[in-house]
Image 1 (cartoon, rainbow, N blue to C red):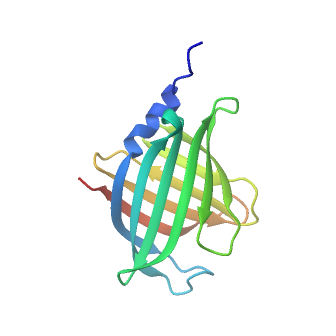
Image 2 (image 1 turned 45 degrees about the vertical axis):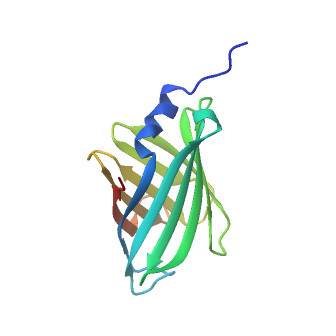
Amino acid sequence: MDMPKPALEHRLLQRMIGEWFGPEKLHPSQMNPDGTQAIGHITNRFALNGFVLFHDYEQQRDGKPVFYGHGVIIWNAKEQCYIMYWFHSSDLPPAFLKGTFVDDLMTFQTEDTRTKVRTTWDFSRYGQYTSRIETSEDRRNWRPFIEATYIRKH
């Protein structure tokens, strides 16, 4: 019996592989009333024979790590969407997000939390990507939370 092989949807994640870093703008929010600047460090790698992408994140402020995150991204063929499980170093529970990858844009949204979160990654420029995280109470009025541009380390 032949073992399954990653589908096209898994291979689309290839453009995310590698180490990335860049400046982040944190907009005013309940977590950070004045907003601030930070530096994000990201490492993306395939696991489990190319069926899973691990997304490891570290945020630094004033040269010190202040926040960590770990995402597990899979393709759900039955529902025809990407799924991300997001774990982080805060007192909030892990997040469950569903997403799409259309052209150069990967977009995820939370499904089950009071405050909705939408994350958009734009891979339209070679060697970098932009990230925008927004929040909403009603899925109609979105507020920017974090905006960043990450450059691939070589």
